[in-house]
Length: 196
Image 1 (spheres, rainbow, N blue to C red):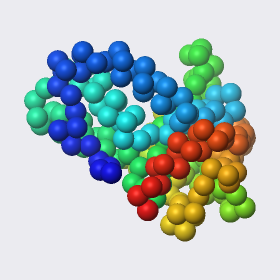
Image 2 (cartoon, rainbow, N blue to C red):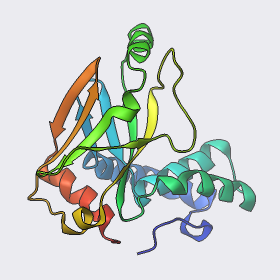
Image 3 (cartoon, rainbow, N blue to C red):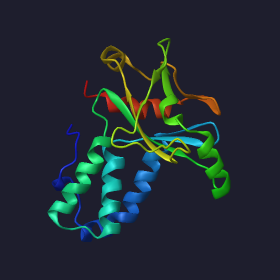
Image 4 (cartoon, rainbow, N blue to C red):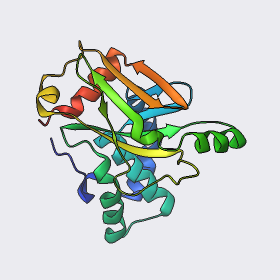
């Protein structure tokens, strides 16, 4: 299966407008099996080729981009978020509905993006690599959005199956939670490792 998206994989703005609503419903259902909550305020959305294609189509639509170079720029921006076969890539969202609470929380959560981990079976915790494209935190506050890569050792990735416990967690002083993911989510994200 091809991993990275190319211009030929995308719909024209006109064609996309015709299928947008049905595709949106499909993608929301797909994302629901690829999304986990760690505590009450952090959500990880595991990206794949489908979620990224949808994101690009939406960006092209909103920005009314139809020229080839503009489309290629979007592909170059979003393609790195597609898993490479040895990793999981996730968008990390820190969610507080009220702005005042969110600002206070983000100030207390500096560095949280570097303390997100996965534990597979009896193996040691594997910490995510955060924000490889650019730094999204300052010494005063963290961003509400981060991009994470969980790089799995090749043997672990090859032998992973849905019967193994997979736990994601965060070890920040002000935010310590973990969650054991369900079989549906395991099955969905294990498919990201098929290219090993």
